[in-house]
Length: 198
Ligand code: ATP
Image (cartoon, rainbow, N blue to C red):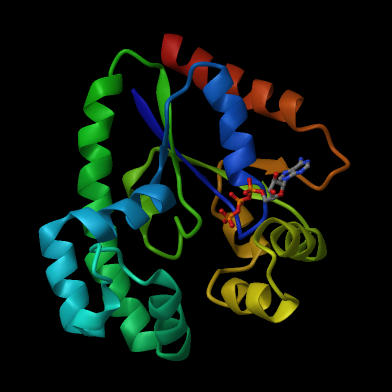
């Protein structure tokens, strides 16, 4: 079974595109979702995050204050690196366990916003990059998250630009509100499924 990474910058539509693959019966591991869950549930991760950000980063219900963490790491690259070095191995391990349930599938997808930036691309067989122009991504995220342009641009600044990621990817899906997405997904699905049968 092949492991396929699916990535794209904020607002590129990777979750939306991944949903189309799910409709085709392909399991999708949502690394960004699980990263948030693990922050609140995995004792070793909680301990390390308290060391990094102080005990008050967790509220009385044991939930991490992600807004506060985001503010700290956007202002301090070292803290961002340390945060990543705690979260990414924990998510990776969780993902490998998840994978064991899906050995009957031709391939699975791992969806992650910062697949390349985190080095997660090294653990997958191929990468699908979802690409969209920056103006469109900005508009989508402002609308989805009720965010200001400054907030979205700050989040984009921690991600590589599309050109760099496209050059390193095996497949590209253009999700620019012009090109149809479903035929692009079907083409990749067919190539990945045929490769599996050979
Ligand atoms: P993030 O990295 O922030 O999680 P993402 O890449 O997963 O973002 P989505 O959440 O899938 O992006 O998409 C961003 C927003 O744009 C969503 O509100 C989604 O519904 C919308 N969107 C994405 N693709 C399309 C499309 N082809 N047509 C219409 N709306 C779209």
